[in-house]
Length: 500
Image (cartoon, rainbow, N blue to C red; front, top):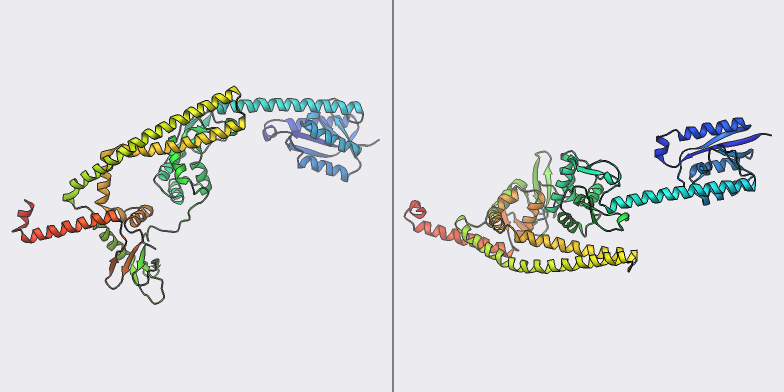
């Protein structure tokens, strides 16, 4: 009697496939059994890693081949658990094959599914294999959970870190890429757009896509924290070094909020910071910008047909810088101006001190609620779902409060340097505008003239209408001072007497 068969080999993981002779060993043992027992091998199936959880395409291919070749009545496997370690799945397949007249043969023992006793023995071995697999999986999961709860991240190594050791002994160190990621966080805190951050990182040798940058900026791992399903979604302190502080991370999330998943397209260039900010004095349309290719000269222009209101960017920028310089404090008034600024800051600080007390009280109350929640969970008074939801709500509130506390702290500290910074900024608006990157230049423009500024081609200069009220006061002070100075100069016998 001719006994045609297929040989089936299987390993569960890619690691097993790459790091051992399991497949070759199974194949050799099955071939020897077939030769010794008079089987004719018609084909080989499997031969790669296939999950034990669900029947994959390889076993489906073998079943399809059996249906096509009715002469094949046997499948030889080295051991029953190589057929599958999922007892329920394997028993269903065995029953389907048995209904087609196909017998599973175990090469290591010679037992098969041709008899009720053989089927029962095969089912017993499969059930034993599934128990062993489940037991090992539980141990593996328990070990991972223990590591995560202990603050040791054992998932995929995040970019920016080097990793040594395994399991609970895993250690991370920040590498050169991590130092660049720290810069990315700092830039984001300064309000730099994502596309500019990507450009800066690329110039420093780190090329990542915009989606990868977003994942980095929203990953608490970089702030020394761990969050995973093993911690029930709770954020815990990690044992790895943080690239930025937790408060800074929360501030970045605050900046990103409302813009999650939205990436800004680079629509402006530093060559034309005034585009759409300048308007035509005759029709009110915002100026666009272009470059004359033959002369390679930049221009701003009104797009209305027949208007012909256009001007070279070089002249526009020079006049705009001169205009901004009229909003500066005269040098002789700086001391008085600085005193006024300090008084304003001190006055604001009292309100912020009160605000800090309120925020700290709120934080303390939330931390107590979090502790009570953990105690209730440990006592079994609340179930896991309620605990997880409650913790998430409390942590979200705590995060917002910590961001506010950080803001107040920043405002309360460095009083002198804050006053100096305000005074310095008010003394160099024109220079600051012309030497800044696009974002800061446009912030200055919009601060001074929220509704834009008009270009009058007949006078060859700007016309202002809607100015920032506070800066308008500075402008008037400066003009009054200059007029007074000129009047005194005319009545003075000499410049030397005035200076003296």
